[in-house]
Length: 322
Image (cartoon, rainbow, N blue to C red; front, side):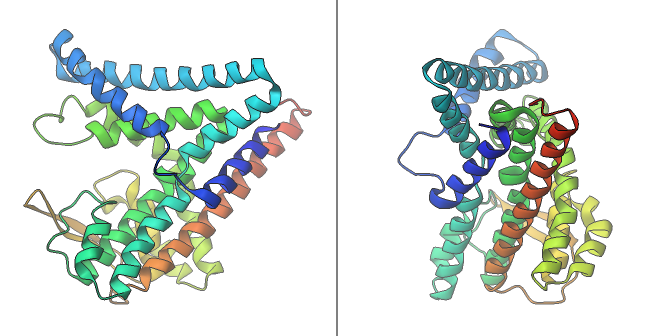
């Protein structure tokens, strides 16, 4: 089966069933692997930054090797089994339905007037303290999380899948998991997590810049503020502390006419982030399904362009599969 069809099947599977809670997931295994390597690396290597580099390289390498071994082993059984394994591996790297499900749980709690439940639900998808958030704060946290996840949860793994197949998708997921595990600027990880954070920045560099203009295009299709989205992306993308997250966050803020960023608390400590977007509308729960619509349309456009470009390259090479 051609890789393009494998990717389409994986995306369809994700949209249909999402991430089954009770089944083992490769991302959880990657996280456990990274944490399991941390202590031995720190013991054997006295320089935290070097130890962190080694853990990052080994984690990504082992993840890629495991994905390759699964596909190769499946291929010995039957080509159809190898296709199924490839589809499943790509499927585990994508999280469209899960992001929509989590954000809509927040929306439903707010619709029911249950702010405490909404705080609890949004706390499952953000790292900030949520116990003191008011309704606009809960909505802002949710919109920011969805905006960021468009890239690191969906378009970036699809980008690497289109380039390098299931191995590329899982290797990217390993990079992203490393950043989630070690990419903190606290005393424990400021040096050890340096490589994980920089590797994640590098991996998302191109996908973020490809995805953000598509958010503006999706805004036009959904009759949101497409021109404001583009203008806000160009103006505010680099205000974000992350070199990549600001692009989709700014595009989403402009499309919805809301202002993101501002005051957050992490473990009780205040952290004020630069404002992104203009406050044309007050943040309200209705922005959650609207940002989900932007996510779905953006992903659809990205997928069509990505697979179309790949098919064109294959055609120009005379049908040689990449």
